[in-house]
Length: 632
Image 1 (cartoon, rainbow, N blue to C red):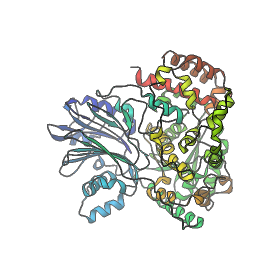
Image 2: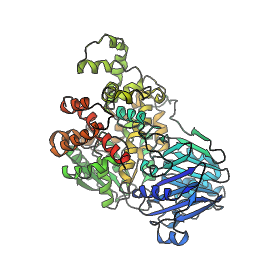
Image 3: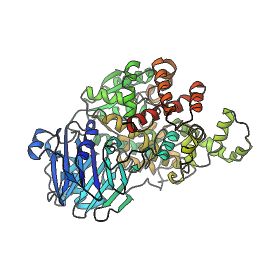
């Protein structure tokens, strides 16, 4: 788990001050080491940095200012093979292939064994070297073989190509800026913005999807010409003619195995989850399990114990999470593992509020409790934390999935929309409901964000008219059943939202979150199951509950589904400090000439609906995002 950065200037050499500043911007991702590689006079050279280990500084000169068309930067969080043999950028024996890699490959030991039989030798025990040798053996075909989370950059001087790739479901982020002058890439946008090639401009199309979905849908970001490489994608840049091509190396299985029973599926999922947990517990540093008190993370903790009898678990306690904390503690006692509770007070939640919001590089409608969870893990010296994230998307865990069958029925009455002439708030909500024609529309409305009409009303006309509101390019297969909804959950709710937030939260404190529910085998198996086995329209995660029933106490199994996040509405309603914070930032926002001040005032003064605070918080976080990234 680390951070990567790099650039390719198409027409001229540029100062290496760029890569130094880019790497420094993501130093939090890798406090243990750093390294650089430059393409100087048509040959590669490796350099150390000010934060490199002493042994690396002895091996490579410290990078000072130079001029180069291609540069790679790397920050290391040492997890597997803690020695300098795992240092990056890592080079092939002939120094013609160079790799920087962020992530973890859980099947790297199996791949290593296979590569050894094919004649490859290894000098480290790191997964990075396995990826390098795998590329030498199989080329880009190796990406589909990797089981894990990854963002990878490979410079292939044999073929004169740069290759960027991201894992199947986007567990590791990889952003890039592209224009006529060059290409810049990094694990976080804040690093890209340090490069002289990059022009910092708002992408209102990205802001539009952000307001609709509480996150910006890949490949868009809220920055003009900065894109998120889509999950399961590989991008190749030709160094001879600067031609860029993209390809997808994996997609969700589309065929279902109809000849399987629920009992068989339950047994197989149990087995696959055990295998995934076993692999993901492997590390050369301490590993813990973060328990929220619900089924997903508690099941991981219970199944981890046979592989690590001394596994540590912990729970974050925050306002209104008393029941979750109680159930997590009960479960830990039930299967006999070490457990700690970290209480986050109101004061602690609000401390560094502005800094934490701005860390996310786009507007966001929440306080991120995972930042506190990551900070606690670091303070307890846990570098690796197993998370239950991904189970909701894979097994149908969100409450809005239970509204799917009703929507499929009600969409037959969408013809009533033109007959609604009244303009009160209730009528507008009804009209909005009967506007949902596509599965994509239903998915959008389930995100509890601004509605399209609200965005149109709050933006100045000159900005709104520049936005492309046609989002058909994001549509998936549009199957009118749970399978269709499942595609959107896996594509957008997971990669563009939850694991993306996880990564930024964890890496702010140099901690690695891992996701046992998102192994290749488990995703492929569940996606191919008959729909009636994994979704019944009555209960969330019915299939995973069958597995959990073998391991968890009844009190945990009966826990209602709740999100793992601070109650923002509580703070807005009860904390004058937060209300003053909001009012101050809304006043600042109104002066920017992007939004209609009278609409902002109306929204702020009339908080009637349970979720009216969401759109206010989206505006506040937009203002904080703008302050951070556009006001120099």
